[in-house]
Image (cartoon, rainbow, N blue to C red):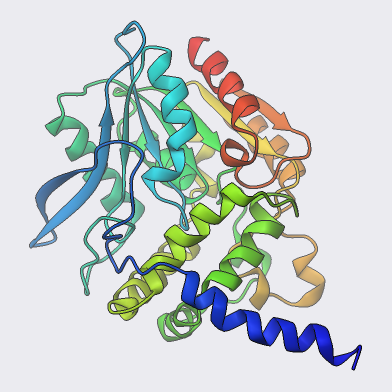
Length: 331
């Protein structure tokens, strides 16, 4: 009886958790963004697509500077909420887009995803908003995109700020086997709130959990709930392929802009780590070492280390992160 009880309680709780997960659909319909959500419509790869974004004007005395914030794979522009508030209060104009294939934006069925394409889309958005110079902040997958953006548009980028970026190592070169689209797609179709919560706790928040983190679980899980789940899973599978097969690892020496690396020391993220041989898994996602190694390779780079924080320091400890972010931008 004692052995069975926890299992019985867990089994009973699963339907309850599923019932409590909101249904937002493939473009987050009904999910409340922290600032007015707008849409940028343009043609890409012969299709009319829509890119969601937030454009937040300074609430403090304007300093004339703009910051674009690029979200990670399982994140959205909305997850920058705390940092946007701090930056706006300090006088910055902030633009936080949802990339094509993610969150509020279009998810074309046969889109060829690449970091070059996403960078071009972001560049087009900023041009449409009349922004010529910008500090680029990229988190997780957004760090890979931010790096590619700075390489493509160095004259536009005043600073590059990378927050626990993935791509600090080449997983394939280290021996992680690639997955086919079908494998990624089948994996993504199984996504639910409980699997998201478990992964976030162990990776994003260094095995800590607070009730406010559930908001971001609901955001991600809500896209997989109800009609349109296959559309979301397909886009997710295609962008995993982009991340795995388009490394920026070999290009860090080419950066020509002042760069800051923010590294939560408890991060252990590595794409497709679960597909790697057991012995290799222990070597992947060693962010304390990866951060130091990449900082040495980037010209004019500064390394900031957050002891005790995981993959998402801007969410786990926003007060500390925003203080350091603002200080880095002022420098």
